[in-house]
Length: 432
Image (cartoon, rainbow, N blue to C red; front, side, top):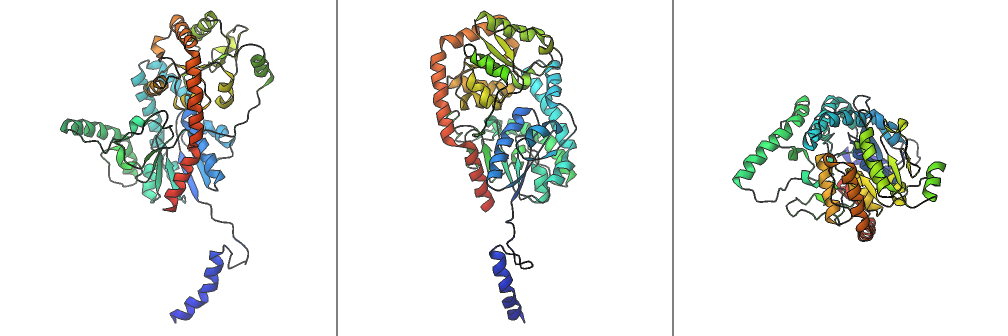
């Protein structure tokens, strides 16, 4: 009885292998592998996943990207399927309020992380529902989706933006290292265990336990940082992710400003220029220092300060303009050293003055300084008209060397094809 049944099924099997429906006799649409990823934070925390999503979509993947509702327009502008996660808040404004109350860089960063993690914890059911039916979850640096994917039995791939967050699993540890590491690991694991409890999963002793053992993508260039010899093999430096096809047409005002004078300094403090309230004194410091140095400038941010602020004719505010365009028009950049902005200065070959505000930004500032594409960092707590002026003059005195180094590193970064390499590695994992 079994043999005739098996023989009868062969025509259907053959049609299925050729992608033809046995019901209609017509060719079926090939199944698109479904991938979801989630990220929280400021624009710099979202942008890398937009670049990755776009490249995955080019390869035929069905991609869903979840984040704060305020990033809906930004994400959908790239034709990426967006799902809102968490309350409808202006995350950059909320982060500015936290920074305003906590001037210490370390405390400010911890407070911001706690704020974001509460959103993640309260949104776990939304994330869980969005994960259903997916073939892969790409887990962002905040570990969003890792526990939900585990509960659903869906494989994961990780992304880590800060190399310091990657465990040195192959490093021989002393007894003291193990004790201290265990205590720190237990504290870091606490918030994740709250989510694991919701799904009846066993608690972990360290957040390392929830990171993918298949692949952890690090979107940083090997020409900027060396691979740590104590990392496990799944931790891979891919090169920076960026949009190679970015086309931007400036408005008349910006175009006229750029055409009628020397190359300007770009002041781009990113989310650090989002104010809880007007910060005229802070903007004054930059404007006066730039004026004193005899330079022109384009200013991004300071939305609450600029409406009532009279800029000199040698300066203009430009609002939201992609760094892929703006940085290529500037002499050099004064920036906050967020992950995305730091990468953009190197990708587009422009030297910079780093003004780190919080702890992780200090690490990125050091990376730029170490490869001599930036001046020594000017921490935000040390800002004054004089300190900014001195940093500009330091840049001027070593500009040719830093510009040459920035252009060299740009060429090397572009040769890596970081986002394409990331997608190649993801495809490899999915095939396995």
